[in-house]
Image (cartoon, rainbow, N blue to C red; front, side, top):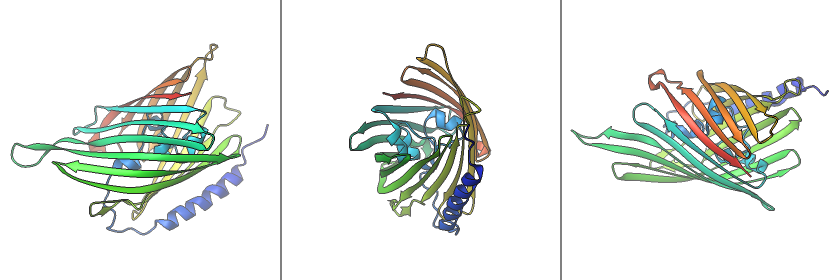
Length: 297
């Protein structure tokens, strides 16, 4: 049995990490923390894995994490996510569709996030709403996949709104039958009103050891422009297929920037129903729940 080339993995990850940190090492007041949900995740499976998904993405949620993953879709796919019990009247919901054609894979997604009932003056309140629309294209050659996004953002508070446009670019490389490397650069050139969205970089590695059938272990680091800190993510997943191959289950757990996540999934033919329990990295935000339905055809 061919072993995972750990020395090769260490060199590759080390080089990518050095480049990533070098591009964004300088802290600056230009970081406005706008649209923070764009630096987290979508889909209950990804959340349960601690959002360590850049090297894993291979369904319709790829448009968010790494557009290169859309090239894995066989024909058609869709994804949806509903968030429940988010504190402070927060909301975060998501829907996406994707298809693979002779000329490559394309996808479209919409995420809605924000806070309801924000006090304005006296007894009045207003909703703060943010939307992210993404159009994606991906293609592949042998074990290498690449993809790009067109990102359109809008926000609105008490009737005052802004919009912006930008782009993402990502790659995935299956450099070993048991290992995939993923990298994405996000939010290039996005300006919302007077605020410019900081660029975001995510580097991930997904391992599927032959000796541990059914297991998958993703790891990821994230660096946001103008910030000095690096976010670390990791997860683990075990999948089991029943004798009737139409049915399967999954158990998952992860850590996202120190916050614990856990979840499970149930597969029926091409459909996957996933759940994730989330503890927020900021303690005052508490915990919440994610539900997703994903289909691949």
